[in-house]
Image (tube, rainbow, N blue to C red):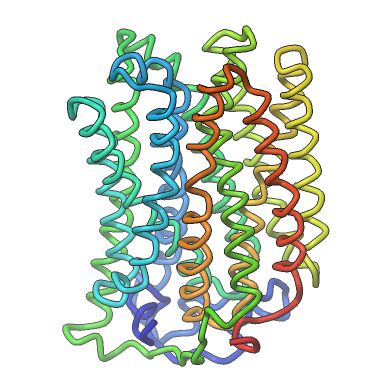
Length: 439
């Protein structure tokens, strides 16, 4: 990625010291912010806070497009006449879009700046979520969903870059805040979609479209950030210092590959959970409303844990033990879904919620496995794009196995089997290494 990729969204202009590029999190590394730059008026004081607000609002809107659909999947299938296989394809669309569009995020950021790309991503989410219930037929629904997911994809990749560039000495806490907001948005969509649909007249179309209003709010702070950064940079952007980029051949890094596979396997588990867990409980005799609440509990577990886990991870030299612990919780949850899905539903939801915190762990490791913001954007794009590509077959296989076997035994066995290699590559990705030393 070019040196100016991060300058558009980075802290106010001014040279950076070497220490600000380190993913450290302690008092000996004070947070660089406006104070590291020449005085830029009042904006130097409030702009970082606005970035935090934009970060949180964006995170809140990066999953409702997916989990709201999971809560109403049966109604959507009936309304659009989908088979089980097509519904499985629908749950695979997020991973496909994240892989396809996420790889383009660095190039888009180089051309337009990360802030503008994130802002455009929020607009895409708003339009896609608003349009897809009324697009007409399965094809239109998928196309509008792809638009929303494209916005999510580029924002997914660039959020760790925003954190590394604005808060390099607070990677753990800021990743925790971002992950917590993401988990909160996920759980709120899962818990509120069904009751909101009933309150708004009972139409699944309205129940899905209402989340566009929340996405529209997330556009506002990014509009201000982009406008302010462009004004500070001047017409040619010549006032902003360029961070020095260390050449990295990302595909030559074993750590990058381990992170990509770990990210892919945890994404497989997460999107199977978000897409199919409510249906597993409903087929076991749990009501639709309760199934949505159970998914919300699973997602809500990520709210506190996503805040704590990155802080803990940045204080460990090796994050492998955390990957093992989360994987074991996932295996226990799958065992419960196999043996007694309804009787122990709340326990399995809690265990799956803990296991799903592999996502903030992966984000934290992305920020820790490079010494610079430029390296983070390469690693983030590579790990997330390759990872989501790996995750594409999972939800589709689950839908196919469910349709042809007539039950959830084989799909759950598949989920449990994938958790074993996730643990193994998590241990490899957690080693105290940097991609600059490997590639």
